[in-house]
Length: 181
Length: 194
Image 1 (cartoon, rainbow over the protein chains, first blue to last red):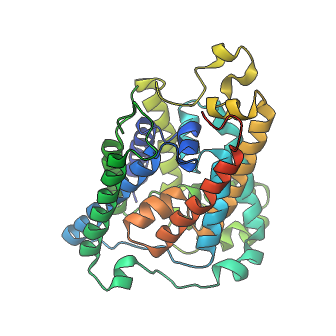
Image 2: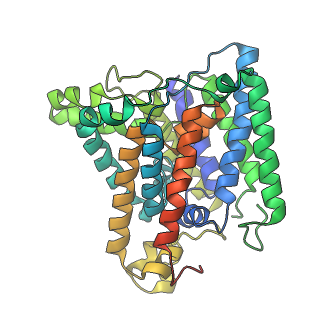
């Protein structure tokens, strides 16, 4: 990927995270305390749109879509990540955007993240056989599991997510009064 | 600023994620930490960096399984852009009127608690050192977790689920399965109403 295009995409990513208010501790904690699901709705609708976008463009332009592998570290890391996420109130991406927006509260999170990166690197050799080499299923995809074409799966997945989000919004569940979205 | 509706902001996020994939990248941010911290380690001790950072997967910011060199590359450019995007948007739109962040509240607290998120201060009080400890611990756990899993919220959940990957789906479910009880536990009882 061209580094200047990466910079430009990063600016767009940061801008979108800001206007969605995903760079904010309070909004992240409201999502995790299930009092305002704005951020998960935003995220999952983004996933729905990108699933169709990626596989439509891939079919039209003929580029490959590389995948990340599944292994035991994925669920274990996810559970651990959830604990850290609730304590920090930022994720590794939003902490950078929040610092750009001048949020001082994000600073200790960055220092913790940098320290964690270093400590993990020291532990990688010991942890790899315990986690990353276990249940190493490789690049498993949902379309592969279903035996459907990627584009058909993406459209079905996107419709299912969108339908669920619209229904969730309609019920008013975990949606504070006075908020439209 | 009034926050964008989830559908508008989500459509924009989907467009960004689609564009980055079509350009041959991924919306991965945690890999940039490995590259940056690895580069700093290399500066002090090339042999230590070789034995540690160079032997671990590049993560969600790079499709190659192992780092071939500690170059900044596009994942680091992406997070520099992310920083600038946050800066640009905050200058263009100012502080939100719905946000629970506290950068505009230093006047009302009358103390050094001005940097604390309002929700956090209502629960834990005006104790900046406790927030620093929580934030540091949270950041530490998160980055260890992303290196174990091979990605984070952006690379595994947003990009990964968008690519219909099992790993992204499982990681996303696990994040909420642990994150929700942790948040409820942190905010149990007093101060939980805000």
